[in-house]
Image 1 (cartoon, rainbow, N blue to C red):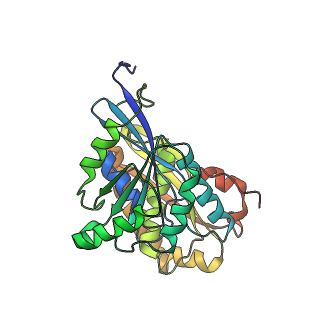
Image 2: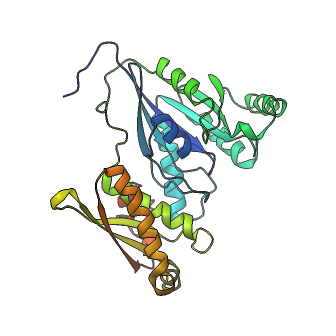
Length: 303
């Protein structure tokens, strides 16, 4: 049972930004554990993933949102809606901008949309290790001239530089209130969902050139066996037979490698041996299926 203290504080913190700005990496750094998958492929995060961090008497509920971009498909619209919804529901909003890309058209569009989001806002310049100090100060000045932020932080989410200062600031400015989650919980995502995300990460990392945004992974079975082992069965859905052949690989070698990589990481997270079985199925219009959106934690756009 969680003990509530009068000194407790709790903040819901939304991270928004363009695809590949580093939101998932920063959430993982702040929580000190992997709660969101990270790949070099843009738009990897599809739903709002919550990581939970403790700093002193403050609990920070970190909402990793999908990257904001110009949507073209129904799935795109659902992802962008989820991102802005996360910002509107937050106590504090962090705008991450890839310092190396600067104030490009994507960043400008997000800054414009940020005008409709209330509450404190922080500007987070990420990947600052790639730029010189003079260029960073110039970029900060440009951004500050287009939008008002309560504070600006310069970080490298990949190596952790500046993250401790950001975490301390968030803890200090969190509103007073009871914690929403137990002290030892690092994410609100069910393990079935996290397991599916880990497999999707391995799939994306291995096939990011060959496979477009046409795959999703669902955990269909999670069974605890004698001796502490866990049996997990997952289905990889693709849209065409040609994509199924890519995922399977010659003599099934690609899917075997993906399964081995995912199984190894899941065993490490769970602390028990994992038997992982992957099945690949073609579902031509899974991107138009409301049930698939619900499985991913997204609202199904009506049009």
